[in-house]
Length: 209
Image (cartoon, rainbow, N blue to C red; front, top):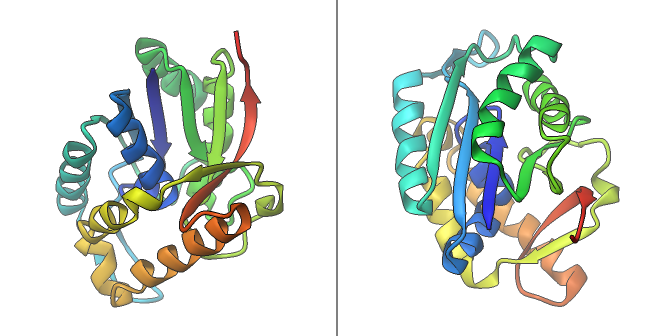
């Protein structure tokens, strides 16, 4: 099975569906990751900086841990606009991968980059059979109540935490609070379906041929 995960930034995929990708890895599936931006930025409100070279190195390390092929489109973050040109650029890359299943952002995500990539991904991946939307931040996100696909990641939870810890460029700024948040989020999701830890998705399309 060919799996494609699409993220706006380095760390989005690991936060939103890292456990699920680890499960695909164990199954022997072919995993590809597309990261749209170089993920470097300077925040005028928090005076924080993320160096794009470090973000890429961290992303490459995580891709290796996942046994995944990594493609970075190197676009500038925080200014993404979901144009048809953008759709065609992503569609061109996806057409070379020909995935059986796609994991990507929610178009209603509160982060503008995530929302843009979610919209573009749905257009670019419209020809493929299975599309599932993940969540990768801790702010209120439109549509989270519509989660209808659960993945038991209990055996992979600690490995998922190892993936997230790789992103020191982000984790140090929040005193590694993401670790606790994600674990609690996945624990709460697991409780809904009777497992220890789960990741949740909204499936847009699930076509059994």
